[in-house]
Length: 344
Length: 251
Image: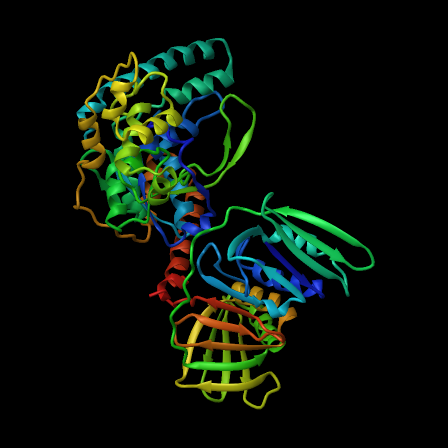
C-alpha cells in the first residue's frame, strides 16, 4: 500500500534505455504482490503447476527479470524481514480486506461474473511462506543478487541508494522516498500494457523516475517534513492519518506550521493515535544491514530449467528463449560503455 | 524575447535532423550570442554538442539567456515540408510558451508548437586525450560505415600515421576498409601513437548519415578504447560535434 503522495511528487517518465547500466534495488515483496495480483487467468485463478502450487510469482519474477537484464538493467531484489511492530494495525487491516475480498470473489464466481471475480481475486493476493523461498531460489539460479533485509525491504533498498550501491530503489510505493531513497523508479516490474481496473482499457506503462532532492526542492520542505506530511495523510504505521486531511492539505499545513507537532493542536477534533516520534524513527533510522554483496553472474541454465520446467511445469521452450535473451543482454552490457565513464 | 531568422530553411531542417538522431526532447540554451545545445541519448552512449552563434542567422535577437525545450521530431515534421529558397523565422512567445515558426517562400505560413519543461541537467564534455586525429570527407566516411554495416553491427577503427583501417567482423562475414594518406577521402592524418577502438555501427551510421547534409569535412579524433569525437566542420560559423562511447571487446 504505502503512503499516498502521488499527487505531490513530480515524476519524469523515462525510457528503459536510460536505466541500462544502472543498478536498481527492487522491493521484492512489492514486486511479488504485483505479480500475484496481475498474473492470473481471466476468471482470476492464479497460474498453478500440475500439483496445484501457485506459480504466478515465479512467472512474473522470471520473465520480468529476464527482460530487465536483457536491457542491461542491473537488478537486485531486497526481501522483507520482520516488520516494525507499529505495522501491526496495517497488517491486520490488509488481512481483513483480503478476507472480505475472498467472500466477494467466491460469490462472483458462483454468479458467473468473471470480470468481477477477477478484480476481487486480485485483492486476495496473499504471499505464502513458500513464495519468497521460491523466488530466492530462482534468483540464485538466475545469477541475480538478492538481499535479506532485517526489517522492511523498502528501507533496505533505500539505504543501498544512499550508500551509492544502487542507483535506484525500485518500488511502486512512495515510502521509499520517506526512507531516504535518493532516487526511486516506479513501474520497472509492471511495464508494458496494463489493464485499467474495472474498465476494458489498457494503458502503456513506462518507468517513472523521482529524485528525492528534486522532490524536496519542488515542495520546499525537508525530508523530515515530508515524513510529517505522510503521517498526516496516513502511513503503514498509522494507516488512518488525520481524517479529512489529504496530501495537498497536509503539505499546506506542514509548510505553514513547520512540523506535525505544531499542526495537530491547531486542528479541531483530531484523532491522531500514534506517536509521531516513533514513526519518524522508523523512517529516519530504519533497521538495515551492510551485510550484502551485489554480484551479477551468468544464469545457470540447467538449474533454472530443472526448477521452472521440471518442478513447476513451465514451458521449456519459452524459458530457454528468455534465458538466451538474458545471456545476450549480459554479453552486450559487458561490451557497452557510456560516456559517463569519461566525465571525470 | 527571442527571434531568429534564417534565409535557408533547409539548413535549419538539416541541423535539427542531425540533433534528432540522439535527442527527442531537446533543451536549447538561447543567449544574446546565439543558441546551443549539449545532450546525450537516453542510453548515454552518445552526445551531441551543437552551437550556432548569432552570425549564422540573418537576423537574431535574444534579450536574455533562457532555456527552450522542444520536441525535435515534431519540429522536423513541420520543417519537412519546407522547400528550396524558403526562409524561416523562429520566435518564442514567452507568455503562451509557444514557439512560432514562420516559413516564407511562394507563400507564407506560420506554425506554432508548444515548448516543454526545460531540463536543468548540465552535460559535461568527456575528458579524453586524443592520440589520433584524421580529416576525412564526410561522404567518404559515410560510405565506409555503410560498407562495414553490411557485415556487422560494430566496427573496430585502427589508425597510425599513414592510414585508418576499419575492421568489421560479423557472425559469418567480415569487412576491412582502408583510408590511406593520398586517398581522396583522407585529407590529413596525425597519430601520436597507433590506436584502436570499437564502436557501434548503428550509432555511427545514423550520426554520420544525418550530418552529411550539414558538413563536407569531418575531423575524427580517438584513442585506444576511448570515446570518439566527430567534429563536422561547418561552412559558416557554428559547430556540430558528436561523442560516441566505445565498446569494450570481451571474450
